Image (cartoon, rainbow, N blue to C red; front, side):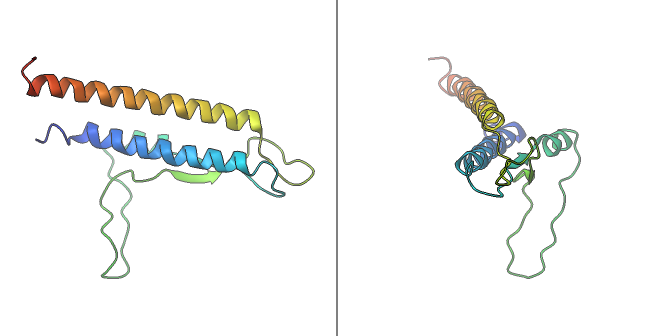
Length: 133
């Protein structure tokens, strides 16, 4: 049973969650294209994923209250930062529709690739369980 829930499956699940979160942020950036003073945000995940694969322990979070939830799961979320790709316009808005659209297309491609890999993994497990029938 540990084969179904090994490190690769957990990493794929976290990566899918990240892609969903990143899609939501990019969509919010595009939705605020006419909002005066809006600065787009970006979700960074690559550095955390790289350190996870290198075997470095995740940053430990300290609970300050006995009823806080346990935070032992690695790579829960990416790090959000302002995306200073373009200069602000006259209203102070720095959303570049071309840049955001390319990020959205890249994110969708990565999401579809992860789904394809996950489905292949599950089909291999199904063949193993049914003994090739």
